[in-house]
Length: 300
Image (cartoon, rainbow, N blue to C red; front, side, top):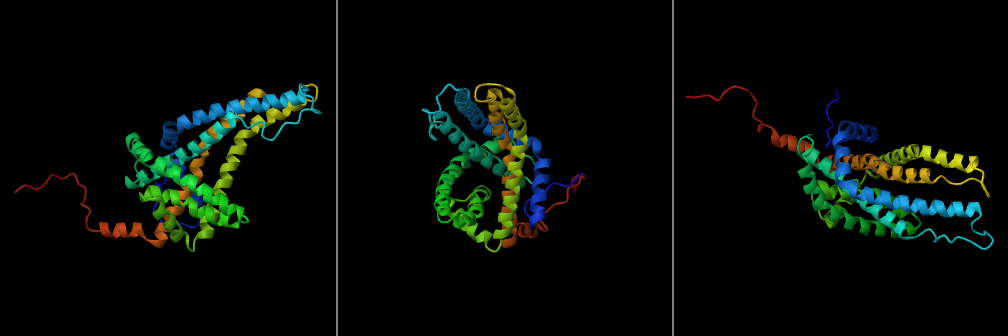
């Protein structure tokens, strides 16, 4: 049996990737439990919103393809699909992503604090209710800054992405304010930008590939429906397949445990490189550990 992952240590690029998968594999059951416990309400809202949006989109497209609309007169606007369902989908998507980020980071922080022991539900809830609004507010501000930076030829946005991403583990692991975490993220990533950026890019690619693999069956069903069902203007998009696809995409958010874990390992790698906190803790504990024996206390 492999030993449990040591979180606070210096890692190279390959170790960050491999230890990400190892940590998730060793903790998959409690991670899934807490994902559905604390993110379930947002996932459920996203499921309903996604299903309603897919019903509207599929119904409109099938009506156009089936000739219910005169395409010479009807020109759907790009904004014709933007109804309440779409905006609810965006809102629940953002809330669920913030919730799972806080959930997974809280788990990692408590896992380290408890010396590789699984935290309890009460401990997790204490962390999540404390950090959720702080991370939510910080996210809105960072998204705005990233949007502005991306408009400046895109390069500033790319450069700032891994730096801004580090703000969240700093806030949770160090119980830091946004201002402190903002400045510390620049300090930590100095001279380590490329490795941090490369590690996160690889993990995000794996994340999106996993979602695409899960979505393949519903895509095939839609392609078969378009080809095999003879109607005026061609086949019709499968409504059940569209809804199932939307549901699967929402559930696939659980794969975000990979980039969040990789981000946490990047944080620990950078803090160990800059501060050596784990080494200092071990030095401070020298001579303080009392041997654990089953012998009775001496009596005089």
